[in-house]
Structures are given as C-alpha cells and as structure tokens.
Amino acid sequence: MDKYKVLKEYFGYDGFRDGQEELIDGILDGRDVLGIMPTGAGKSICYQVPALLLPGITVVISPLISLMKDQVRALNEAGVHAAYINSSLSEAQIEKAMYLAGQGRYKIIYVAPERLLSGLFQDFLSRVTISMVTVDEAHCISQWGQDFRPSYLNIVHMIAGMRKRPVVSAFTATATEEVKNDILCVLGLQNPKVLVTGFDRENLYFEVRRSARKDQEILQYVKEHGRESGIIYCATRKNVEAVCTVLQEEGVPAVRYHAGLSPEERRRNQDLFIFDECPVMVATNAFGMGIDKSNVRYVLHYNMPQSMENYYQEAGRAGRDGERAECVLFYSPQDVRINQFLLEEKEFREEMTGEEIEAVRERDAQRLKRMTFYGTTRDCLRGYILRYFGEKTKRRCENCSNCLYEYLEEDVTEICQKVIQGIQEARRGYGAGTIAGALHGSKSEKIRGYGLDRIPSYGRLSEVPEYRLKEIIGELVLRGILRSTDDKYAILSLTEDAEQVLSGNAAVVMKFSKPAGKKAAEPKKKKPASGDLDAAGWQLFERLRELRMQIARQEKVPPYIVFTDKTLVDMCVKKPRSRAQMLDVSGVGAAKYEKYGERFLDCIKEA
Image (cartoon, rainbow, N blue to C red; front, side, top):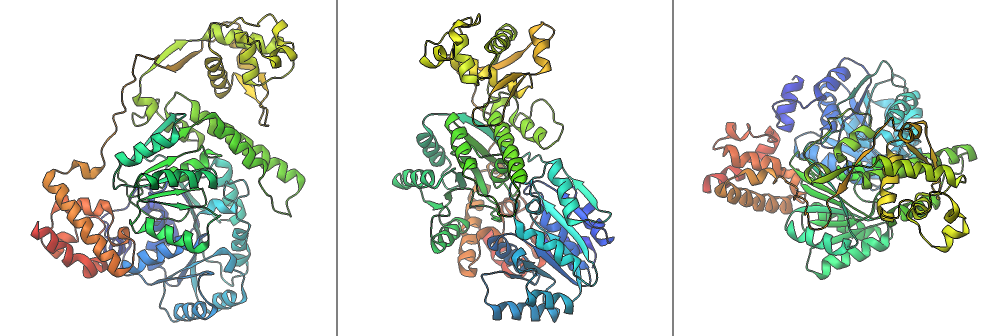
C-alpha cells in the first residue's frame, strides 16, 4: 500500500493538503522533519500516514490526555489500531497496551512526556522496533515559547538512550523564528526537512471590538449564533464564572472550565461541549489545547490574552474543519493591567537562574506590548498577525473588521511633531497618559506635580481629546517612531525615526473611526459553507446532523469523530446513492463507510 491508498482508505481524502506530502516524503526517506503549520492544516496526517507505512511502531509524544484520547479515538474509528499511555490508565492497563504493541497490535502509541523515562516504558523501547518518534505541540520544548513544559526535555534523553535512533518528526502551529530554531537545536534534528506552510487561516474572520458593555455584547452575539458551537475565553476564573452565569440566566446552554473546578466537573463540562450537548464553553486558557473539535464556529475573547502566540492558538480553535468561522477580541485598556498583574504573579521553575527569569520577564512584557498593539491598530488584523510570525502579507485581507469597516484617514504629522517636542521638553521619562495630559493642558495634580504645566508644549494640543492623543502615541510606538519600555510604567523615548518626522522629512497618516453620525459599514461577513446550500440542501444537512448525533450517543464518541460538518455538507452537495459514490465524499474512508455509510445513504435516499 502506498501513501495515496493509505490517505484514501483510512482517512477518506483524495489528495494531500499544502505541505503534507512534502513532509511525509521526508519521513519516508528517513529524514527528520519539522512542520510548522496552522491549526486545521492537517498536521496529524503528516505523521499518521507514514506511521502506517513504516515497518515498526511510531511513538507520539503529546502534552495532554484529552488530545491523546481524541486522536486515538479518531484513529480507531478510521480503522487504525492505536493506543495511549498516560496517568488516566492503571499500571496493569499500561502493561497490557505495551504487550499488545509488542505483539504488533498497535502501529501508533501516544505517550505523555512524563512517562518517557519510566522503567516500564524504557523496557518496552528495548524490546520493540521504533521507526519514528513524533513530537506534537513541539513549541512546548522551547523555554522561549509560550507553553514551555520541562517534561518535554525527557524526549531528548529518551532518543539518546535508544539503541537505534529512529526518524524524529516535530510539529507545531505557532512558532516564531526564535522558537523554531530552539526546537531544531534542543531536539537535535539531523539533516531536517523544515517546512513552514504559512500561518494564514483564510477561513477565519478577525475582529476587534472596543466596548464597555462586554457582557451584553457577548450575550447578543451568542444568541445570534443560535445552535453554533463556540468558545469564550476569559483571563480570570472570576470572569469565567460571571460570563457563564450571564449566559445561563438567559437560557444559553453554556458550561465553564477553569483550574478552580474539580477534575470531575472539568471532565463533565468538556464532554458536554465536545458532544454538542452544550455548544458554548466559557473558559480560561486552561481549556483547549488538544481539543480537536472541528465545528467550533466562533472564538470570543472576553479579555485580551498575554501574547499573539496565545491569541492565535486560542482563536485557531475555530474553524478547524476549514469552514468559515469568526474570532472576535473584546478589547479594553483594563485588559493590559490585568495581564501585567498576572505576569507579575507568574511562577518560575526553581532551577532557573535570576538572569533567565529576567530574560523571560522581558520577553513576556514585549509579547504583551505587541498583543496590545493588535487590540488598538487600525491596519489589517490578519496582516498584523502574519507579520508577527515573520510572514509577508498584502496590505488588505478583506476578511477582518479593519478591512471591512470604513475609517477616515487623516494626516497627523503636525500633531506628531508636537508630541515629539513635548517628550523632548519633558526631559525625564513619562508614560503616554502623562504626555497626552500635558499636551492637552490637563490641570490635574499629577501634571502640576511633575512641573509639566511649565513646559512650552503644555496645552499646545488642547483641541485634541486626550484619548485621541494616547491613540496617536500608541500608533507612533507601533511604527517605531517612539520607543516604550517594557516595564509596568511604559516610559516613552524617541527613536531615530522621530527626527525624520520632526524635521518634516516624513509624513504620518493614520486611520481613525468615523465620527458619530457617520456609521461605519457593517462587515460583509460570509455565511458558513452550509449556507451555500439551497433550502432542500439545508434540510438534508439538519437531518444528517440529527443522524450523526444519534450515532455519536450510541457509540459514545463526539459527533465530529463520526463525520465532520464539512463531510456532511459534501454529502448534501453530492447526494451519493451507492457505496462508490459515498466513498467519493471527502472524509469518508473504507472503515467509516463500513460502520456508518449505509445509514447515511438511507437518510439521503429518504430525503
């Protein structure tokens, strides 16, 4: 059997997605690989297909129990024998799994990183042929990544102790250039095939809303999206409780998830969400990593995350099936202060030196600053995200709020010159709020106490509101014309580019929201793919969803494990009438057809 037959027979796909075949060929040629691919790009196919073609066993290191269970459940549904080893199993169950693997029962074994150096697992490695070691969520091995896990360093020791080094493959969705190089170095990848397919998720719509009425706006949004599945992220447990209560009191079937709940409640609520019993999950960032739910149609952020890495990873849990989905950040300046407090309270490993801790704190502060710029920029949001990860982009994506809303462009060169002069005259370092207050002519005790009411620039921009001045200062920092320190008080200073603006050699044009009375155009949001169906197609889609839910309950698996929404839509479009036609539907492989195919064919024929 070749890679194409494996892809079709087990996974039901006719062709590979961008980058998949290249990485698979690298593995089959015996090369180490590193794949950096966005969420939903099909990273698991890149190691699962070669795992079925290589002679021995593939060990997949995965950080979360829920991720392992989902992956193993999906593989077994597809007709691939797989198992997992983690703390949810007893020692007897682990021994049985390894015994069966040694007998050739399993081709793929998922393992928690904490288990790699145990005597039981080391003994297992010495008795079987390991063809490949796969590192999932590989950014967890880099201490410069946002999710560093010390237990991931066990992978290095495990590989070094093996009598014959296997192929090593590593995959992640979010990695800056620095984290990518750290993964290559720490894992010691040999002659690796490195592939970065790009970070863009074209099916995702991005929006930033600045609102003082977050609860009401989120409630309205969720009600407008009816039965659709969505995640609402909050920065604190307190906010999770409050938002979930607001939704539940209004009759929304929502559940909560945070570290303060008992393991039993977290597990129960997670299952209710995954099985589509409660379509709305309100959670801290403790939820989501390893959740492979494909039909999440929106991810809302009640609070701004601490970094672009965190935001893109969390937002990327929407639309994993490739269908259109929305990612909306509800931004407020208070979010910055909340995150600064959380970072100050961050705990570090005992073995880290003072110098390492200081370096991490500086990186955290820089990441928070870049995330704050995302919440305030008027430029293309998708472009901002992609540039952060080192990718060149076009000026407008036409699928984010900043591209679809109308803004007024204004030449603010003269205002910027006066801002720069004010910073020069202040001499000592001050923050954006203080400088804006002085330029506007604030009579506050703080301004007088600093003596800023006596500088020549005091009140020189009295006609410009303070909030607008702070907005302009923030944009100047974003453009590198001003510099802002990364500490709590964010002191301003000038860069070389400031001189170009001050001398009149560089103009500054910025976008601003239209004034009241000039309503911005509503975003031209696209409907999900199922909206492309006609009335009869939509009715069939709903009938297939009901059938899928019945099967999911009978089999005790999440509905998307049976078939994804994308597969159901393809059934509605192609309306298969035979086994051969059903196998032509995207996502229907031989094993799934044997289990479910006839029931779905009957449902389609009855429509």
